[in-house]
Image (cartoon, rainbow, N blue to C red; front, side, top):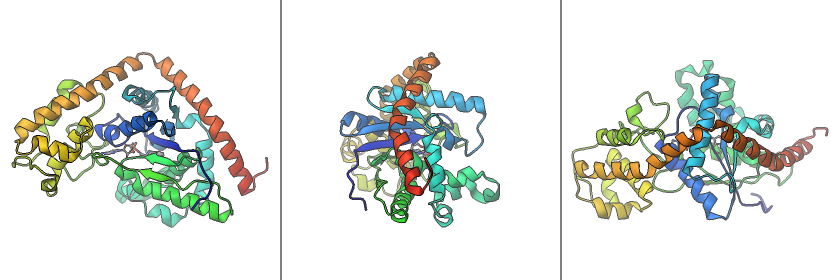
Amino acid sequence: MSDTQFTPRVFSGIQPSGGLTLGNYLGALKRFVDMQNEGSFETVYCMVDLHAMTVWQNPADLRHNTRELAAGFIASGIDPSKSILINQSQVPEHAQLAWIFNCVARMGWMQRMTQFKDKAGKNAQNVSLGLFAYPALMAADILVYHATHVPVGDDQKQHLELTRDIAIKFNHDFEVDFFPVIEPVIEGAATRVMSLRDGSKKMSKSDPSDASRINMTDDADTIAKKIRKAKTDPEPLPSEAAGLEERPEARNLINIYSALAEMSVDAVMTDVGGKAFSEFKPMLAELAVEKLAPISTEMARLMNDQAEIDRILAHGAEQAREITAPILAKTYEIVGMIK
Ligand code: TYM
């Protein structure tokens, strides 16, 4: 463990590999805004375009999705005057440190990554080398800022453990106390938002069924329709959280309500216990529209001025490099590169 005192700094990222979902918003983005506004951290947030291209992206779509994601960050409340907002490829130190970490991380560690195994499936020989090395780039994203806290959804937990392992091994191998051992921040009712069609599957932008997710660009009618059609069971809602245990679809909708309303699950259960889904779903739809529609409207407005988005990202990259360039330079020195 590290004895060095590091500046409390938050880093997190989202892939511009498609649209933003309600899972991204509740599991990550909303938490990013909370941590920005809390005021106890410096905050750095990132569109990870280099990660997105580990699976094929049409170049025009990637550019569009990156700008749209930046608009989503800002529309959700990330303020470029309070947080550093960047696009990964515009800060070259991420990829440079990733190479060093490729040489620190072990094949066995990477082979254990469940997300790689899920994404590669039976096709492991045919996926990109980048997909395999993905978690080392993620560790570099975080550690090139000496970030200390990383808010993410539950599915990123194993990658953050690997980030800790890389920092510990680097510090040990080079006999330094240079990289912080980060704290994952996986908190709240919505660290794992599930598909609206199947309570055992994560809500994901890559699910072939659009009805399985709420997209941050969906209009009010679409949001309401998807919630109305969400899979449920025939029983009324229980009055206590314990009654949700064997009911994944009901639990998912309650968790979504709890996160959107910023109420504890227990408080939600007190309000809605005993109600049928026919009564609860319109309540949830109304709440979701109230919270999400202003974000999608603002995203659309921001996308009308893409030059302004590009300007914000260029400025973010400049601010970021003031932090990352000295950390990379020191890393190069530690490992023995000539200046
Ligand atoms: P990505 O783009 O898949 O997801 C971005 C964030 O959204 C969270 N998330 C969810 N949370 C709750 N329920 C869901 N259904 C759900 N789906 C997604 C994810 O946990 C994540 O926090 N590898 C990362 C991106 C990344 C990164 C980083 C994150 C690259 N470098 C450095 C943190 C720090 C990813 O693919 O996230």
